[in-house]
Amino acid sequence: MSSTERRVLTSPGPLARAAARWAGLPEQRWLLQQPREIRQSYADEVHGRPDEELHAQIWMLRQPKAVRESYIAEVLLAPEG
Image 1 (cartoon, rainbow, N blue to C red):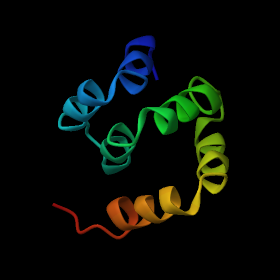
Image 2: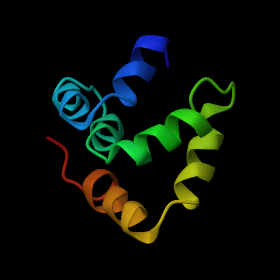
Image 3: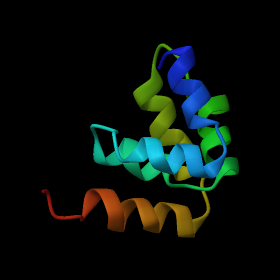
Image 4: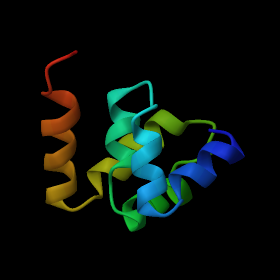
């Protein structure tokens, strides 16, 4: 994730939600639609790590149940299209 991507990720809600419309992957769209504190947590704990995928999985497991359930419903089980 570039510094520009990080700025968008940690931007105020309206800007992040607008950027979500242009995101290429469902998980990117989901993250950009989350509250700013969730996006900031992701940026702080996952952004820029060489093993980003592993840290993203760990980060998700540490999130509140509502956040995990939202990811399951909106990304993992959502119909493609």
